[in-house]
Length: 185
Image 1 (cartoon, rainbow, N blue to C red):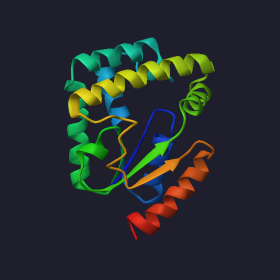
Image 2 (image 1 turned 60 degrees about the vertical axis):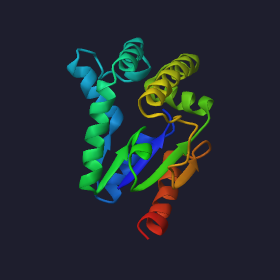
Image 3 (image 1 turned 90 degrees about the vertical axis):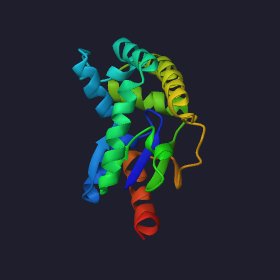
């Protein structure tokens, strides 16, 4: 079991999908699972950049008041981890699981906002403001639920990779080398 974690815009989802494909593992995204729950509740969560939108931030606020959303997703991720042969794209599993190889992807707030602006076709300042708000609320949710400091507590990680100056392909190649020589080696 591999777990890839990092703040929004660090490259975790892109990397997790590519790793799952290369090593023939199942892929599960905590963010995608939360988005599915948002859709069930009537949110229009399929739009590009939804997480940084007003509606996405509203859903985040609702999650802060009702831990049922996050707890349901985490329960599913724990089940997937138990089954094995999975890459988890998750903000919580590194702290909730005792096993597996856990990677943190690091990048500055500005670099991540730049990536999100490009991905979601929005302005840099809009991406930066939404990212700051989203991260503050997300960190509060996980601190309240589980007691860890997302983006500050790196104790559960086997490997930390700075993605600031690397493109997606370079990050992928580095992590493949680490996986083959350390995690699977």
